[in-house]
Image (cartoon, helix red, strand yellow):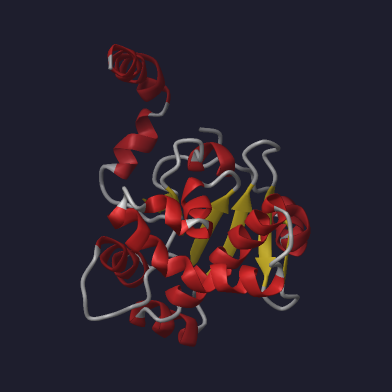
Length: 224
């Protein structure tokens, strides 16, 4: 904890003064560009991966980057999604999985979760993705099965996301885009789901046209 406290002091004395105008602007409200749903894993640093500043991402994190299908039951994910999509009017939602995910490893091997009953129950929201892997790759090695599960889980959670009324309404209106990503901790690579092609591709390929337009408009990523 002393290291964290020292970090706060450094932020106050060195970092904050450099971005004072940004924080003064943020004190008046937020207008994030995306709802970013990812895993709670400490190795996934959203601002570093996306090179964004405070205020640009509305972030939800949980074990396994899971989005429960919409029901009448109110939960933290349901409320956060509704607020981001219906109140903040974010134009994008990203669901981002990652390699070496303990939650997905647990989903593949639920028998090892007897001592973690709440984790085991939570991961039932990924069960359909596990069934796909078991059906398509029953004899594949563990690494191949895990990679497939990471991708299938992101696809499944995107489907769940579409059941939320606020999301369905915005999709029908045509002013909301959904994105599925997988981040590789070891290499730093990010692949993005191309629904039309039914596959994941490197972000530079998946968003090639948009990136060209962005560069042509003089856009740049923010450092964090």
